[in-house]
Image (cartoon, rainbow, N blue to C red):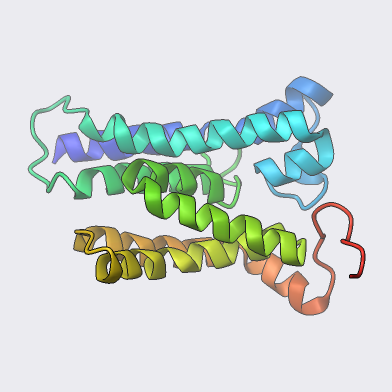
Length: 215
């Protein structure tokens, strides 16, 4: 039990690293808070919008790495002996702790990002094929709609569908725990985008880039 608690805490701490907030302070000064600009989100997309593509790419990659690190390495940490948890479950729990840390970071008043990048890193570590398909869904939806929020929501909701189809069509052995996680993370991502959904309904959501010219 102590090992499980230690892994979850370390995963949470790694996920809590406030990449976007620190990037803003380094580039704009210690008094600057990225959450006061753009969409108000402490994530890669808002950094891209406010600070430029290079800081945005850096923040996104670090946030993805946080999810991968928790899933691949922190989950194997055994400071107090074996945790006696299924080997397929421990990486999911450690990665999920990192996602929660990113969303509710203890280093910035428990107001972090939306968890998409960190969840993406977790999925890359757990099932890279599904991650590639979800990334393709994300890119396609963003290209068609110019809404990153819509791309994130649709990609998250597509994860359990992708896993189910891979199990049926490709005869892939998908653990039940991974299915359960995919549904949980889909709900979590939709929850963190609740303000975006409200703005979409109101027609005030920010579009990514310039609108495509009409065909």
